[in-house]
Every structure is written in C-alpha cells, then in structure tokens.
Image 1 (cartoon, one colour):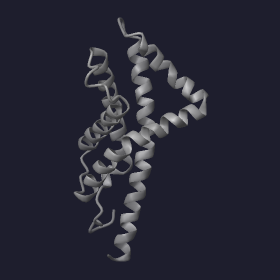
Image 2 (image 1 turned 135 degrees about the vertical axis):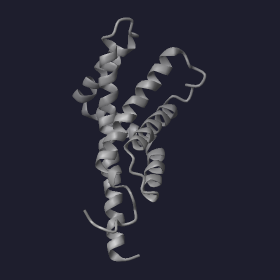
Image 3 (image 1 turned 90 degrees about the horizontal axis):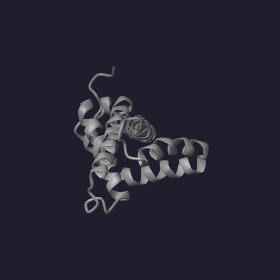
Length: 160
C-alpha cells in the first residue's frame, strides 16, 4: 500500500469518526424536536411532554447530557461501524442508503436499551420506534453530508 493510499484511508477513517460523532449529536437533537412537536398534537401521550422537556434538562445539566450522548454512542457504535465499513469498502455514496443505515443503527440501539420491546409492543412502542427511526434518518443524512458522499477506501483516479 502506497503512502498516498494510506493517507487517503486515514482521511476516510477520520471523516467517518467526525461524521459519526456529529450525527449522533444531531440525531439526539432530532429525537427531542420530534417528541416536542408531537407533544403539541391532540391526544398525544403524556410522556411526549416529558420527552420534549427532558432535553432542556439535559442541556442544563451537562453531566447528564454527556451520559446520554455516550450511552447513545455505546448502543449505536457497532452497527454504525458495520454500515460505515460496508459503505467505504463498496464506495456506496447514495444518500438514501446512508439515511436507511442511520435509521437501522438508531432502531438497533433502541432495541439494546429496551430489550423487552418485543414483548412490550403496544402502540406507544411503535410510535417510539418510528420516532427513533426518523431521528436516525436525520443522523444518516448528516453523516452522508460529512463522510458518506465521498465514501470509498480506494483513492479516486482524479482528485476533485
């Protein structure tokens, strides 16, 4: 492997990490915004209010915010790494694919922190899964903007 190739691969790894850490943060913000908006709808479940207000508490108590951020990283890191490596090895640059990967990683992380979800599948759980998936779509879009649109460990023939 030549020096230029090694440099390109290192650059891709750094872009993957930057894209991941920023997209996790934006995904968490998206969860809060979606719950906040949905809590204003008629007949919204009461806990939507809590989910819309709790991010404000997380912002006011930085250690709590860091805990939520790192917990999210822990429960989404493995599936995101797998998706990112697939995208890099096969040079997959499609925005919709990255958004679907983001939604899948988010729902997978939700399943890890809610292991009883399959037995507890009342309509509110389906709504939560949908909200988490929607936030994952947003996170996947942001990841694509940072790292996914140039995905590929192989160096391009022509630099842009």
